[in-house]
Length: 173
Image (cartoon, rainbow, N blue to C red):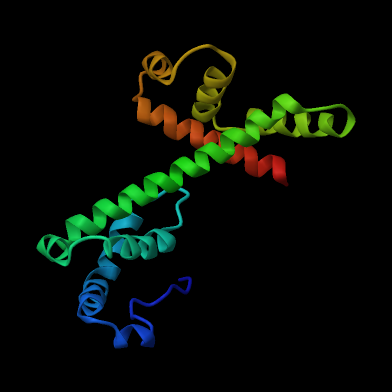
């Protein structure tokens, strides 16, 4: 099992104010639970869970301590899932930018790149490939693609993200 940061606060944090000691208590009581909850909910997603956990505790400092103590697990999970969603969107935008860069392809060396991209697209699993081709080479919206394939719009978005990530990884090799 890979090493992961422990849920203990650094020594400097022990000298903090009462508000920070509340944060420390919240961290110690719920860190492992939050990490497990995110691993379960985000399984299969390319999300850095440790970053999300740390960012969650940074964000929770913005809340009134009474709100954080009322239903801490609900608040922590909501913040963490929102942060994960933001991370997922950033990754999707980056993958989309990588694919859009194809439009600016020039001559010789770029032919190799185009060939690698074509092979990457053809090497996608059929469900991902179908969504990718419909999204990039037809005027259909995600909702129209979802209806045509008999899946949800979220499934179309997820498959498109996965397809772009796989293509990006395969072309970079």
